[in-house]
Each structure stands twice: as C-alpha cells, then as structure tokens.
Amino acid sequence: MDVLDGDHIHTENEWDGLLWLWQRTEAPEGRRVELVDGIVTVTPLARVSPQFLVAHVHRRLCAAVPTWGVHQWCPVAVPSRLGIYLPDITVVPEEELHAAEERCLPAAAAALVVEVASRATARTDRTVKAHAYASAGIPLYLPLDSLAPDGPVCTLHGGPEKGTYRELSRVRFGEPIALPAPFGLVIDTAEFPEA
Image (tube, rainbow, N blue to C red; front, side, top):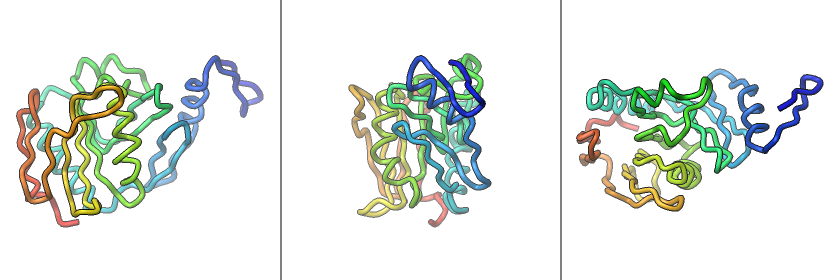
C-alpha cells in the first residue's frame, strides 16, 4: 500500500483500502464506526438501559470463562464480507487475543459474539452481522433483540456453515437461555433490566 498526497492510497486489494479508511475514521463522541459490506457506517451507542443489559451479560460471561477475554466493542474483522464490526460483547480465548493484530481481531478467533439490538442496529444485527459472523466461523452468536417484531427475544445461533447459522435456541425475555460448553452458562433473561 502506498499513501499518496496524504488523502489518496494505492492498495493491492479492496480490503486493504477499506481497512486504511476505517482506521482513519474517527468516531464522534457517543458513536461507533463500523465497516458494513464495505461501507463505513457511524451509529450511536446504545441508550442507558441496553448498556445495563450488556454489563449484566458481560459479568456473567466473565464468571463463566474467567481466563478468557470478554470485551465490549472490540473491533472484529471479517475481510471476506468487507466488514469490521464492534460487537457489544466479544469472547475470545486469551491466547487468540494476544495473537491478534493491533487494531482488529480476526473474527475466527472469537468463540462468541453478543449484539444488543438498537433502533440504529437491529436490521444489521439480524441479517448482515449474522451472515458475516457465520461466514467467519464464529461458533456462537447471541443477539439480544428487545425490538423483535414478536416481542423481545434472545436467539442463540451456532453451527456456522456456508455463511449461515442454525438456530440452537430462542427464548423470550424473562426465560433462561443456556450457552453450551465451553461456557456451561445459563443466563436468566428475567434479570435483564427493563428496556
């Protein structure tokens, strides 16, 4: 990659150019910058109640896998889908985290990603990110969707194959959802804060 005149670059491939652009796009306060299907997107961070939900699940995951990395808004790269996403929670075996590049975690290193739907992200979380995470081979995807058309639900996806997940379980908020090994964790969604 060659940087020309400060604003223009010449790269060997589209991914390198998009990565360069994403790295130089600063997020305004209270926003996050992602690369979705090759397009730089800026979305607001969640309101306070979804942040409490993220914190609740984060604490539970830290207790379940205490020697792993459980991170909020860790950049996850899916070059095959021209994507860099900032999941609400990414769970990574510690050795994978140390092997990652400085700016982005290769998506295949993640064991689980959790997304909490907001008005700005629900459609992307349900479709684009689900396919991207499955394409990257992330074993488990857990979207927490308080805005689902049929009411708030948690859906655990797994078994990624050819860019698609299988639905492992689906519960309404208020019911428990079990995460398989290595987590061996039951999250009681009745403990979720009110939306």
